[in-house]
Image (cartoon, rainbow, N blue to C red; front, side, top):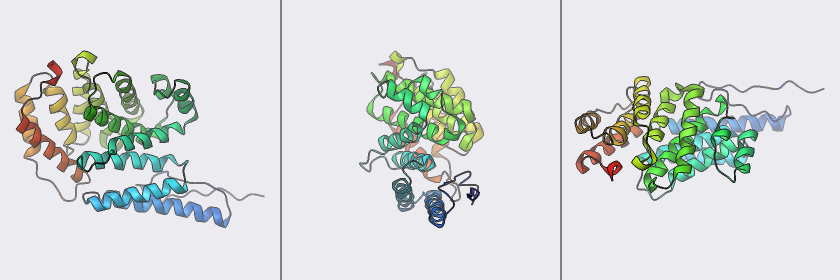
Amino acid sequence: MGCPMRRVLYSAMIGSFLVVLGCGPKDRARNELAVRILRNGDARFAARSDLVDLDRAIQWYLSGVREFPAEPKLMGRLARAYTVRAYAHPDDGLDGFVTAREFGLRCLMLEDAFGGLVQSAGGAVTKRAVGTLASNRIGCITWTSLAWSRWLDERGVVGASIDLGATQALAEKAVSLNGRYDGGRPYAALGLALALPPEPLGPDLVGARKAFAEASRLSPDRLTPVVDLAQYVSAAEGKQGEWAALLGRVVDTTLVQEDADRLENSAAIQRARALLDAGLDSRWQE
């Protein structure tokens, strides 16, 4: 006779993370190891205003993926951590957004329907494939879209319509599944994905503005959606007064030590200063 399966629930941060390997002593030890890895990684990530702690979080998650290569939550954590690292420390020489996207896609490819459709499409992430994803992949979907969009922005999006379609589909799916996830982060992803295309590729600036507004409503202390709104929507629409006011508000923000988004907010302030120094970006009209 078998023994009953055991659930491991140790904090709200971990949520429903569970590794069920069996009922014997070795299996219980593996379960405990998985939980310990995620707990330690999340603790370091929570202290991510220090780059050392952020890198330690990444190392914990990487060790978890080596031990549990089919555990999507660990890959989702890596997509998140690498995205944040690349955003906050863009000049470190690492391909952080690429790595984040790769881990995010690895997480999603563990879903049989998604993986099968992507493979049948020659590796392309199609709307049909994205449509098969469920709410238990909301973190991977959201962070993959964010990392993909930031990467496209860095390298230039002209001629990247296939990539733009994929990151938009992922962001739209995240919003449809749970737009309030992580304080509205799917809306931030959607705003960026919709606004990113240059004029020849047809950006949806109206939709992007609405998405950024909802992201800010759900997390009013987050500064990145405000900077994204200014850079990708206000500038594209030629609204210099709004652009300057949004960026000025960000620059004048006093950071709070206890803010969980302090690292990202600090990076957003630096972005705002750089944008103000450079002047209104008119690349969409070129």
